[in-house]
Image (cartoon, rainbow, N blue to C red; front, side, top):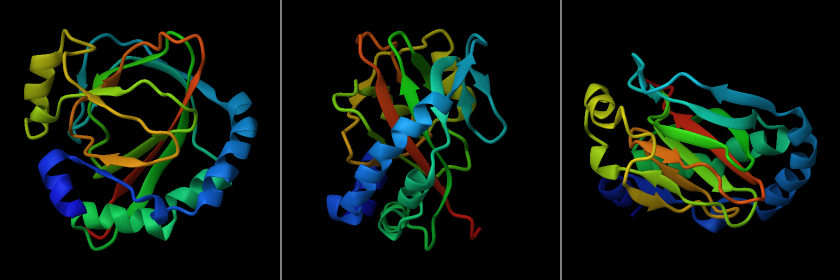
Length: 201
């Protein structure tokens, strides 16, 4: 079922029972320690930069932290790895990158593609009511050069809304161009991301 959803739509929801509920409480407590240590990520280079691994980097601004023991425990949980395997069809998947992003009013992430080594990216909100991410699933199979040529002048294209749920992970194919428009709320948002790859190949 997850495999069919992944192939057809480019995303899957992680069943709630796959994650131990206590992990969410542990992460919530950990955030109080992580936020003061988060560093500003402010890439101001204009436009889209095509990378050799197939990814696309673009301007963004937020504060980031790679996470502590609770975030790593979630990333290394068997339940999440099993979902990554079932969705992608890989025999074994490993979390290769994880972190927490702190968005303040006005922070943004222009349209981009994820690191080519990441075969599935899981994300969720660690605060409630996160604004949706924009994405263009119809460009999933286009080459990086085609995507750059098409979107070079549109940091926030007209696309579909990708829901970011609170404490409920959703995995997506990072080849699908995606973005977060400037946060227009007066409150901050916290986003968790975990990227998996098949290291057996």
